[in-house]
Image 1: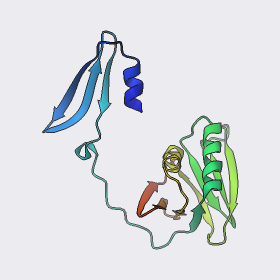
Image 2 (image 1 turned 90 degrees about the vertical axis):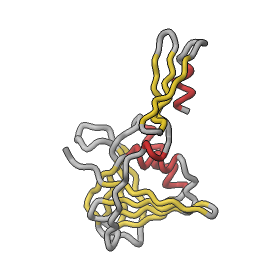
Image 3 (image 1 turned 180 degrees about the vertical axis):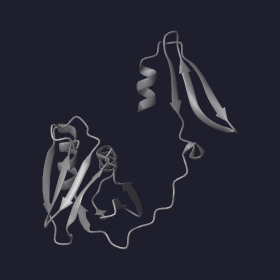
Image 4 (image 1 turned 135 degrees about the vertical axis):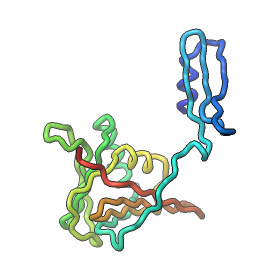
Length: 173
């Protein structure tokens, strides 16, 4: 974990204190003779408010996320040494491209057949966010949907629980 990594650079004598704001612990402060670290705590009150998601009436692209897709995505992601851009487009087959948008940037692409998808102009999303979702879930019963409006929805059901992730299209700056 990131806390263990932070503590691993410290010497034997570690001082620990907590930053408290309005009766909520925000950070754990750790220090030794050389380093000072601030570790963010996971209290629900520390998280920013999330706006309500207005889902589109329809998603143009819909695919099952299976072990093959998960493995292909994560291999491509690792091959690039992490990338912050994941682009999807569809014109019969669905093309997935990892890599930044610049023509000189390194990229890795792969395709998947789909019988449920309508044409979709290229949409780019956070490659890091998709990788984190895939790494942290089994994805045996998972589905990815993408709208022309720029919203990606990843729905995962495991055992008796389910989770839905929403990722908003990246803006071209």
